[in-house]
Image 1 (cartoon, rainbow, N blue to C red):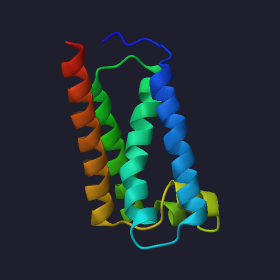
Image 2: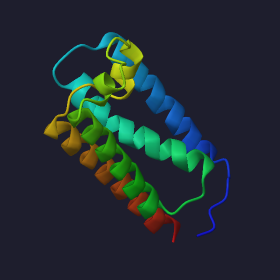
Image 3: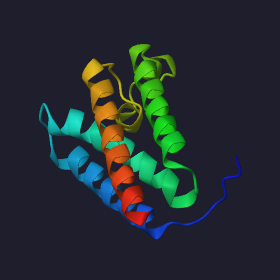
Image 4: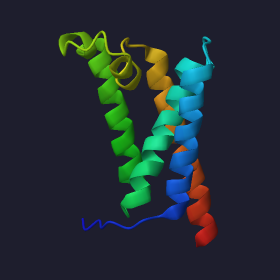
Length: 128
């Protein structure tokens, strides 16, 4: 597998847009759906786009890698990693890593990657 660095402006623009949306959600939305679940849905898309911004990798391994990474972070939340690292007083650590495990987060991650796969499949079909 020879993946090389290559700037992809489309993915970079999408990454920046999604990052801005995530920041706006974090700063201005305090509800029971958009912040916890839509934010998680979007974050996997953000990570995927960010990786694709700089690495020319096939979409399946990239999407699965992002999904496994997300599951891993959620698993660390299950084991209270923020507290174990002594970062429980860090608002940034609690936002970035998260502080509580929830199965619906796993569903949101899966849904986000499912959307990525759906969109990538349409784009690939249209290119061929």
